Every structure is written in C-alpha cells, then in structure tokens.
Length: 186
Image (cartoon, rainbow, N blue to C red; front, side):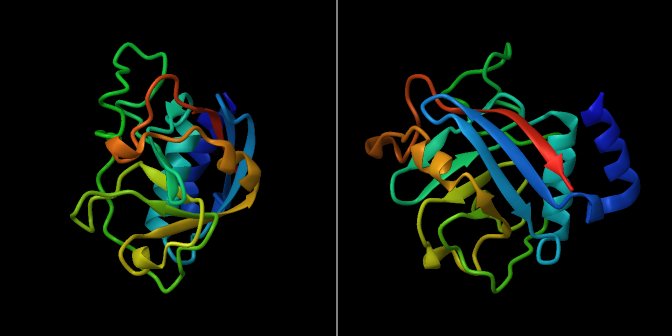
C-alpha cells in the first residue's frame, strides 16, 4: 500500500519528493544501503528510479555484474527479478523497464567511490532502469555516463556484494546478491 501511495505522489509531484533510496540487500552482503538521489543534476533519471522503486519494480532484483575494484551493477527489472517465473541469471542485465529510455544527463560530477551511475548501452541515450555503484574512483567514466546519486550510508555493505568472474566480465555465477526491497526516502 505504501509503495502505491508513494508512486501516486511521485506521478503528481515529479522528482521533488524523491530525495533518496534505501536498499535492503541480501546474499553474501546483508544490510542497508542509503543513496542520495541527485535530482539537481539528473532530474529525469532521479524521477525514473524513484518511480520504479515506489512501484516495487526493484524488489528482488539481483546484482548481475560485479567487477572487483570497479562497480556493482543491478536494476534489470525485466530479467533480473530473482524468484520470478522469467528469471534466468544468464539473461539478467539484458533488460530494462516498460518505461522509455532516458536522454543522457551528463554532468561535471566525477565518478568517485560510492557514486551511483546509470548503466546504458553504447547509445548515450539508452539508460532505463539499470544502475551501478562504484567501489572506487573511475575518472574514465566522467562525462560519459549519467551520475544519479551517492551512497550516504552502507558503503561497507556495497563492499561485501558478491563479485562476478573476471573471465565473464563480472557476470555473477551461482547465487547472486539481490535487492530485497528498495524504498523511496524523502
């Protein structure tokens, strides 16, 4: 009920209500990650992530690509929901949401440890629902990907997320960590 009411409020009010996300993680990593959404630099991306979270779309979504020393990626609400009938770990990371892709909102904000960025294909305007959290600084991403947020609490939980295999470009094998619930915070 709460997620439905939050989604309704977001539809009417835009991104102003969505100042952050609280992500409960389970698996090898267990705990809560809090993220401050940066509406002032990526308003369309912040609005989309908050709306998906309010709908419950991120609940149960796995961390499908995790590269040690780089980042942990999640957010495939189509193919990455553990326990759904369509879940197949080999397809996790290949989908998005039913919402339209977003135009890039590049900024001067650097990719540092704890920065949250939007995942996309080679097309800069293809971000949809997937996002990643940086384990360490990644200046090579600056100006190339949209910065959407910053971890404010729980970086120790991010550091514990199960890593993928190097030979498979970070694809996670076996039982992946997952976002149990993702809640919009004000």
